[in-house]
Structures are given as C-alpha cells and as structure tokens.
Length: 195
Image (cartoon, rainbow, N blue to C red; front, side, top):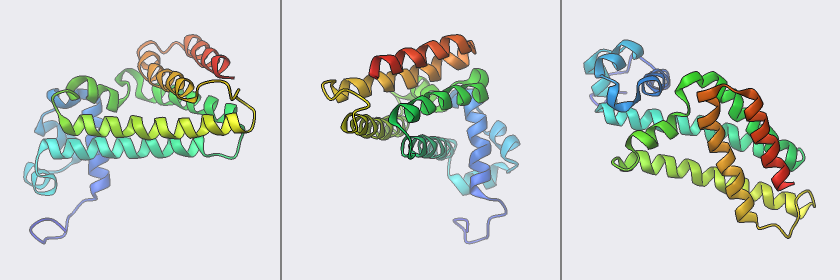
C-alpha cells in the first residue's frame, strides 16, 4: 500500500533494483529524477509517493545492494569446507562480481568515495557492510586457527585486516583493469601470507 492507501502498481524490489543500476552507473550526483523514472518505469509522482525523495530511494538502493552482497559473502564464509577453500572462493567471487560490474566497480565503494564524508546515510551503510564482513572474516580465520589450518601464533585481527584489504582492493583494481593475472597474484599472495 502506498502512503495514501492506494495499492501500488509495482513491486518495490524491482524498482529498487532498477534504481541500483542507475545509481551504480551514474553515481548519486549525476543521476537525475528523470533518469530514475525512465529506468524504473515510474512517473515522477509515483516515485516520490513511494520513496519520498531521490535520496530516500538512493538509501534503499544502497541497502538492497548491501543486503544482496553481504548475504552472498556470508553464505560463502559459512560453507562446510576448509577455511582456505572458503577464503579463496570469496576472493574468486570478488573477481566474478568485478567482471559483472565492468567499469562500474562496487556501488558501496563508489558511494563512499562520492558521498561518504558528507552523507551520514552512505557512511552508515558502508561501515555496516565493512563491519559485518570483517566480523565474519574474523570468525572464519579463528575457525582456521582452531582446527590448525592457520597458525594460532598469528594475530587474528591482523590476518583479518589483511584479507579485508585484499577483498576491497580486488573490488577496485579488478573492474578497473580486468587483469585476471594480477587478480590471481593478489589472491595467491594473500592466501600464502595467511596460510
């Protein structure tokens, strides 16, 4: 139901997914309401009635991107497989995502660079994503230490920070270069440093 009580003639998720694509391709500052209307198929009134403002739709798009991404990442890290295999799979996922993103990179990183220091909403969503991934990585690395895959003498926080920086590094480097050989070197080097 819309705010006025009328049933909506569209599905929020489909509209938000379309908005994700617009913001991801253009950024917040370069994206107009007309661009959003064109890609979502909604009129200006319907868009504002459903989401209130361009910024509120942006927030919903960032939350959607975050939720889909973090859910996939956590699923990979929680698999029933050796820790090294799960960490490698997560980095391979970063490459696949980079291939899909082409020259757009990661929407959350782009948003943080564009608006993170001036927009508390962007800063909050980005920090939440990083914190959730960092926590899951630390748990995975601790698990690796407890079963003997990773030395217990290694500092868990440092290993987590190393791996996290590799993940975010791949999100920036790979879509910009599409250099698989370099990406493989980054993955192999990171895993060699941990295991």
